[in-house]
Length: 384
Length: 128
Image (cartoon, rainbow over all chains, first blue to last red; front, side):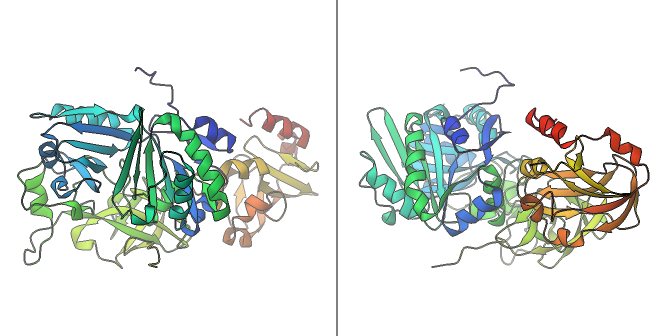
């Protein structure tokens, strides 16, 4: 399939978005809804009830062949060998320098020979080419993005809403969400159609991501809106998706992480596993950087930290960040935090200055605005 | 929708003039385009501006937008309460969300602005 560079791609839900009154914007080469009723209302709906997102722009890459696991063990920071079938893990494709090609989810469908990777929309081609370039042994990679639409249902009512919808479905009935643990998934196939329901998300709330054949997407979307409405479900766009993930301190590729940031610097060093696996791209540097008790020399040069603005100004991507009068970074991500009532952001600070309470300055329209480093995530959902 | 006794700019500000004092705000079209407004920065009383100078800044969750001075003048009053509740701009853009009062230095400049009928047409045609 070829696409004109200037033409934005549309998901199977494009018409549904227009019907719902969505405001559409370009994102990663796609025309996507940024908001429906309003970013703040949508943000609050996710934290208090339920939000529904079209995330069909995300990429899906399939690995097939007995050497699939070996490939993942070489290319990814997290250890895919720990995955049982039906389990998912957050991971990163790394460069030999330990920096990030992409962050992704790895789904184990049939170990060691069948995996599905969910990658960022803006990196789908890049990731596919990267994987192709490094194929070794009996494994093939396939870009399955055109075969999957994707919906995210997020919030404390997500399970209740999605369960109703599954129960009303003729071929997805029988799936019990109360038995689906976090970072696990179900899959169903019938005829040429397929669906994956995983307990994952990008909001800091409980929730699900449903991957399914594109021809089923609109019906599922409508069903979720209809059955979810009495429980407070709202359609939500990329605007709310961004404020939600920022409050939860989830990284956005291109803003917070990229091929200049190492896995440890980015604060996602928790995904690294070094034992019982061989070499992987970036292992040497990442092992040197990952802090370890008793080895004070092991640390990265800098760390992605969260900060809170002290006044009313909002920090935005690209604004200079100063420490002791010197510019140390630019704001990587910055926005209001509607659930916490503060304006927040992320930036890289030198390792020695990473601690909470450190005073920094963000330049907003030529003037310094005070901020300080805080604990993250900025928002944590109340444990029930 | 757009008060008849106000005048309007291409950048979606309005000005209501009484004798030599003009009250300035942004229009319903502007607030709708911006979405949920979360921040407002206004000048101080005593500051002077020429027509089309940047008067202040308004921010929605996603975007930063400048407010331009419709005509030349000196700021004589600022709606300070509005900076604490910028969301009022979304709900009452033509009334409670007035931003500054200007003492006009050159009332002839008002001739370059649009009437409410013309502004309505301008917005219906896209507002650019």
